[in-house]
Length: 57
Image 1: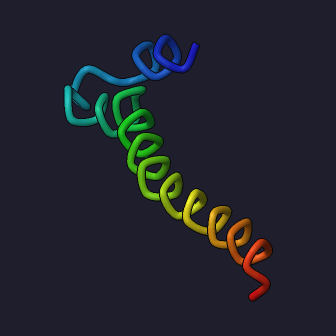
Image 2: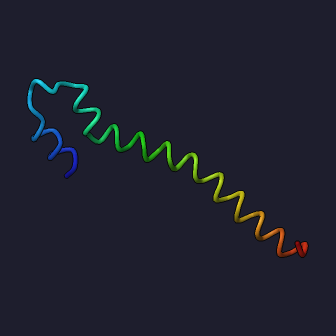
C-alpha cells in the first residue's frame, strides 16, 4: 500500500533518490535502525529490573 502510493505519486524528475527518501526502503531502514537500538536497551532495562527485584536493590 505504502509502496504503491509513494511510487505512483512521485514525479519522474524526483528520480531514485526521492523514491528512496520517500519510499519503503527509507521506512524499513529507519525502522530497523530504531528497533536495533531500542531492543537491547529494553532488554537491559527489563533484566536489570528483574534481577534488581530478586536481589533486593
